[in-house]
Every structure is written in structure tokens, then in C-alpha cells.
Amino acid sequence: MPRMTSKELVAASARPLVLSILARGESWGYAILRDVEAHSGGKLAWSEGMLYPVLHRLEREGLLLARWRTGDSGRRRKVYRLSAKGRRALDSERAAWLDVHDTLARLWDGGDPCPSPT
Image 1 (spheres, one colour):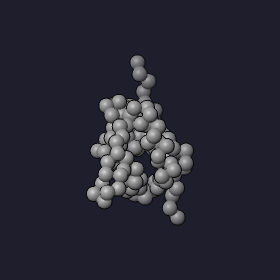
Image 2 (tube, one colour):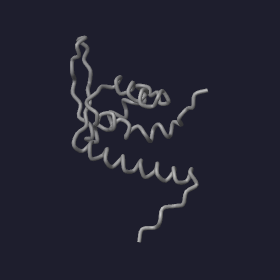
Image 3 (tube, helix red, strand yellow):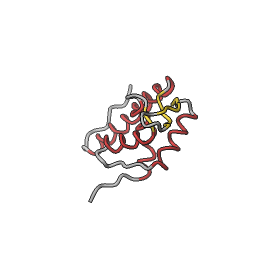
Image 4 (cartoon, one colour):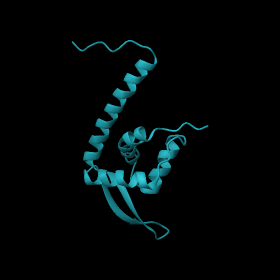
């Protein structure tokens, strides 16, 4: 039986995942959905109803820039890319998620806590 990721964890990770995908270059909604699924090995399968509110919120926050583009098929697509503010937000998100990851890894490995800063 495939392991399911909790809705809460998926929601919490949406922002850094979208920013990370768009750090690789501009993309549109359906391609972002495919990238999430591919990079997670199929463990995260987002719906359009989950993705588009995230894209719109990031665009409102000034982290993404969007424009309409007509593809080779003649179909118009809204493509997104990171703004300079979005790149800075990605750096911040990355640091925060690495802190969480490192803490969980220490706990799960039974390691000692990090020494207190002095």
C-alpha cells in the first residue's frame, strides 16, 4: 500500500516546493503538478484545486511573476517565474526546512541535542 503524506504536511510544504521548482525556470500549472509528482517519486500528487490557490497567493505576495504565453499548440498558458523577492524567500524557506529536517534527523537517530550557543 502506498504511503500517503498528510494533508497538513502537503499544505505546509507547498510554498517551498513551488518556489524550488520555479527556481529551475519558468513553468505553468500543469507542468508544476507533474514536477511535484516526479520529484517526489509519486508520493505527492497535487490537484489543480490545491496548486492554483498557492500560485495566486505567491503572485499576490510578489514572490512570483506571471504572464500569458501562447504555446506551440496555440493554447494560452499562464507561466510563472520567481521574482527577486521570491528568490530571497526561497533562501529563507530552505534554511527553515533544513533546520526542521536536521532537528528531526537528530531526534529519530537518537542523537544528542545540539550544544547551546554560548
